[in-house]
Image 1 (cartoon, rainbow, N blue to C red):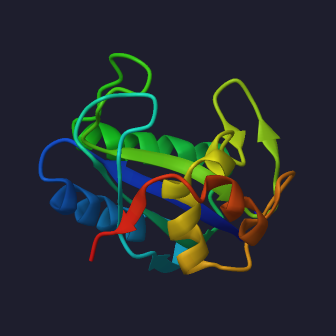
Image 2: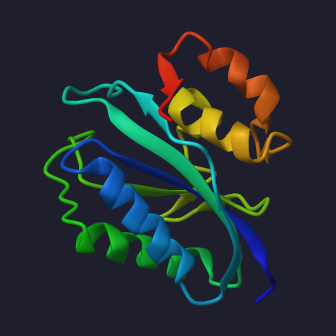
Image 3: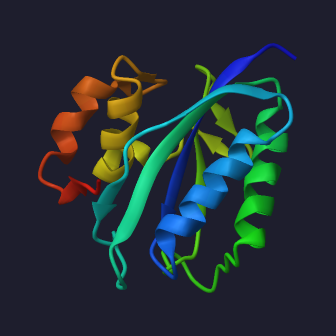
Length: 160
């Protein structure tokens, strides 16, 4: 398989979020068939369409030859190891790993949609992604610089 750039959204709002997110990023760096790992700065945001504590979010990107489905399964395995439960939609979580982008591919299967179907609506995704890769073009949506204007009023701030 050819190498593709994968971008992963990381987020958490339960427990020791900084420790869990750091551990999850370390696990991403250890995935087979991946290289050139990098991570955005951390951003804090209020939950979207939910209640609970604020989230800490970042975006990690790396080159991979893993298939999108194999990468999704690896992400879900990392989530499970960190106690991720899915009791209801938008529930607070110990760890959330979303496959945001996989090269310039558009994927729609029963288990995976890429680009992530709501990433263009979420400042907590777009700001870290823009900080890491400012020239990103979201397939079917356009340049991240254009998408940023539609989320400008959302409350997201750097969490250095």
